[in-house]
Image 1 (cartoon, rainbow, N blue to C red):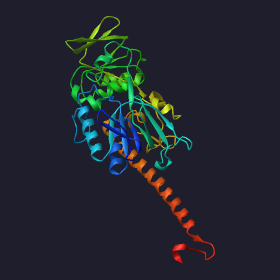
Image 2 (cartoon, helix red, strand yellow; image 1 turned 180 degrees about the horizontal axis):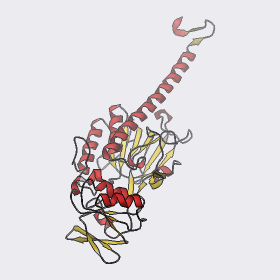
Image 3 (cartoon, rainbow, N blue to C red; image 1 turned 90 degrees about the horizontal axis):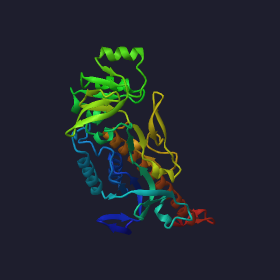
Image 4 (cartoon, one colour; image 1 turned 135 degrees about the vertical axis):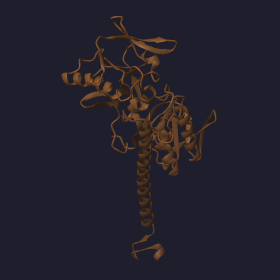
Length: 355
């Protein structure tokens, strides 16, 4: 474990690790921290493109509410490094199984080879993927440019910051009414833009009316922005409805390309029978269908917030350590039996050390 493969731009990288973590967000760093404290060798490879990069702050993270995303990650990296973990900036191009003929050093117990985009490679006993997801927004001019600022999707992440403002909810699927009723908790001025979604049912219409939520028919053409401030929503009819913030439900697509070389494909995730995106299926501890490959955070749970992703990373890190302990113990027992067998004297039916 002491052999240095390369040290580029001040980033140390060894030849093999107990665990390689692909993705350095809250889930990946939390797992790496737990593994480092468990005295495991860990490498975190982070592409440096977190999902919440455009957001100003992280919320509902106990004792760190309001922290900037970049500051939270920087603190996490430092904590991982404090326990001997390695964190490097880079992209994983592929991960592959090692079989007996391919293993260059079977003594390290490595099952996987992880190849970086810059050509470097490392070996790992276990692989943890925490690459998160991509928010795929509806094709409405202005949405992507304002994403994470005044175009939002989560009231628990951003609701307090837009409290009492004029909020528009863009319905692009079956959850438009739900979103409007949800954000009504934060502001009395909510307008539901039906856009491409079906008209509300009779029951939903009654609910919206009772809560004072306006329903705006017609397809949305674009957002209106003045001096870098969202001012309204323009319909294809030309009408502009003044709004200060817009809520939209994106499709959540798992960043799972690195797993395809291991035979894992993303599958659809549904909520109440409706597809909201894709994720990598795993058990409660994060173990996938491929032995030795684990997932945590948004790549597995599309609805996890930052603190939930961090908690998942901790749980998965502990589960991986337990898995490694089981393997270490099995190897120790096998070696112990071999040693006993080598010392066995069939004539005396005793071990040599007993004579």
